[in-house]
Image (cartoon, rainbow, N blue to C red; front, side, top):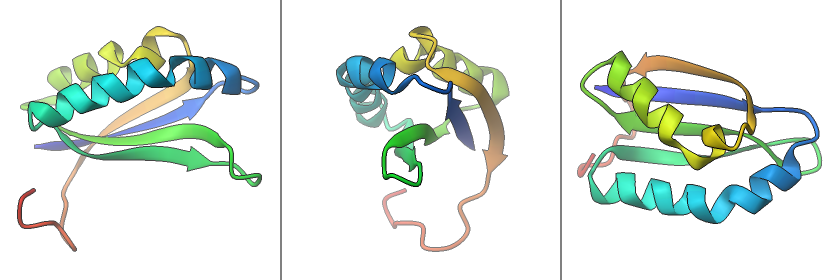
Length: 98
């Protein structure tokens, strides 16, 4: 099943995000290689700068989704002010391969 990880960055933490991004990208590439990543990308503020993340992962249950979220280098670096994890149903425009 799919889970949406809705992550909000702590205020003033852009440098943490930038410094940790290479590790975060490698982590997501690993999830993608394991077919656990549906899609991901940053939320942007009014100036177009990243201030959060939306990551949708495939996991057998909420506990597994929580473990994936906690393993993200952004989470380990303390970037996020909050993380909401919600089960999600991809209904429209789902790629054939997903």
